[in-house]
Length: 63
Image (tube, rainbow, N blue to C red; front, side, top):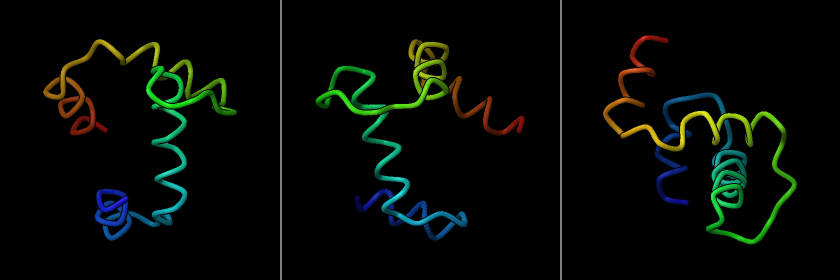
């Protein structure tokens, strides 16, 4: 949650909403119990799950 609060300062999204999204991704990854993750969350996880942090950061910079 602390990380979500830090992100909240940078973007226009509530830390609680960010935390919920993180939890959905963790559920899709099998870390948390199952959740009602959206189809987009499942597709994004499947598409990017094998990327390194460096690769993810490069993608973000391009956006």
